[in-house]
Length: 494
View (cartoon, rainbow, N blue to C red):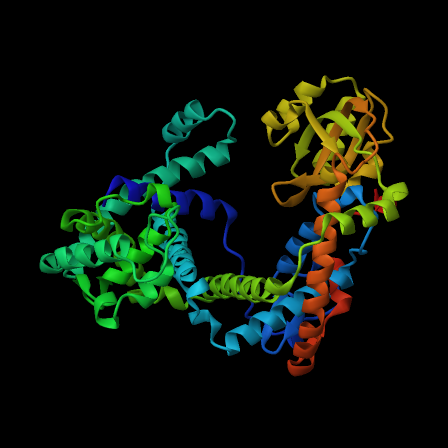
């Protein structure tokens, strides 16, 4: 396996495995006891469309997204984000995905190539987590070595990174063994034919291609190659093959400027085939173990497919939307200018904590006179995050009302905040405050207003379509369960 493929697979391991795998949604909605709502597991369905459930974990993640950092914080509220609103939003989107699936749009080239890569990445990640990681042990010496290389890591994180390195080192040996076990045969005679076909698409296209795009387009691959040419086998193995179209799909997935320049030669094609084989063999091996049928990975794949189907439908519906004109933006600005909030800023230090109790202990330590930096180092989860940062209403949204009133040198907390797409507990120390300038058409106003007007127009098109789908597909929201997955602790509870 080439070094590039090794790095690609390590990226899959290091980035995706840190997130972890969500539990499968196997438990049926009707079997959940609604008693003890505060203790419901993340897999609990909070809504259902046909046979597809929306789990508490999915609901919480989307709720955080809806209330999270946004420029809309500068503008008058256009919607109230409630638990019921977010649940309804998810139900509508699920109905769109189900209908798109029923139309066979999973095979649409606009998303199918991307989904192929996504499915393969999820399968490889699942294999790593279920088979490889339990078999790879790290020593204290290896953890210590990792900490010396990356000092900002916790010991647990360093152990994970060290383990990822060991897993990555084993993958080339695994793939080398699969070459033999799956009887790989490179079709050397077809490499030159593949290069000639690629050269034809690149240099003698049938369709008009802009001069600023000196590369092969997806439309060319689909329309200018015959089925026989697209399925030209460049390598074969037990139960599968790497075809010319597979190679072209892989190249198409790269940033244009980084695509290989020598694909018009047999050697260049052979190089890309070598790079493609590793992942293809891993996928074949994973499927031979039956891991592609595991509910935890099939559910993950289903979610990604639904996301892409939803995006495809929305993009197609939005093609007819006319962008707001300058006059329309100006008229809207004049209408709401007295309601616009100035872009105030606060400079602060933060101690991010594991939970509310840990944040309360950190606040107590600060109240007892311990230095903020010491508390951050001893009790915080990320010492680097204790460095002073600027924040504002658009970053804090629902938490801004607690931060802005604080005076310089005042400690606020325990208080929640947004960190890497999640809501976490923290204690903050206000260092200084800066009054913002009034929003004017010359600074931050127009972009936000233009976006808001565009989103309103998009919603006006999508809503009737979604309304019809909700008549078509059975759906329900289990409202009594929603509060169990509300990530925000109300001020009355603090």
